[in-house]
Image 1 (cartoon, rainbow, N blue to C red):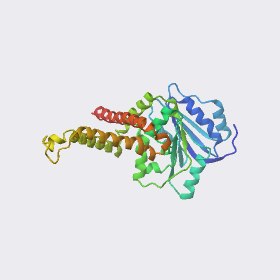
Image 2: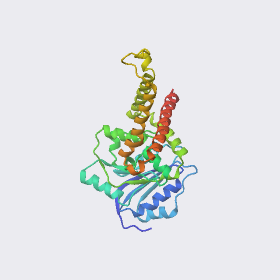
Image 3: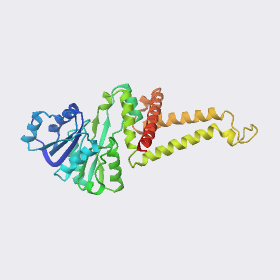
Image 4: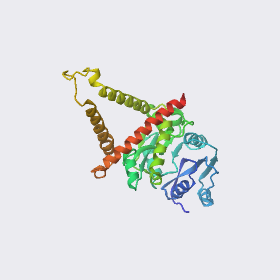
Length: 329
């Protein structure tokens, strides 16, 4: 390995758990970056413990990059990141996950944005790759084609954590979104980058495993102080009330009097049709378009499959929220 790149006073923090192969792929990319961190901290909770190749450690020694590998059992991502933050010696902290692969300009671009704008940090953005038909359908239902704001790929000044606190350590997922919401509440001077990371794990997952991950993710997210979970509860409650009213409209409002002004013939069929068409339009067409999915992919027939999978995912989310509620009790 050779490196003619600029070395910067940045601590790169990477949590890893049973993803050795993905981590090695990520580490092989580091020497190609235009700017290199002078400190790399890997927090490992794998079983068995992670063993890194000697050539990477040799590379770090040769180019005077401080390397720290910390082992600890049964760490959730937030806990692992907190250990990295506490052990970091630099004022600037960068975050990556094993499944996110940045471009060679990622770090240099983020540092330039911070310096040029006197910013407190730069958000990461991640593009979710999908090559097979099934993963493209799943992506259309969830993340979309446009790169989205993510914690992986972000670079912050360390004092941001003094203002916003550390990550929640007791949840398996959603701790990044919770922390990002705290950053927004504190009006931290954050900027966005045009350099995005590539996430490729959708292509290695089956429909069943993706839905299972969706359930697990939302089970933990429901425990966090997000407004979104509350909004979803309201949405499902309002939808249920609307359905009950629609099914009983003629009985409640018109007392089954067909001569009544308020009596609606075939109200049940009409209500089901309206709800179905509205759902298909929103979940199968409008939301995917807003997330960057092309019309030529949605039409003429894929909006049907997108709607069906969206319904499965929404039902899974509702079950996850319900499970989380009873689990806490």
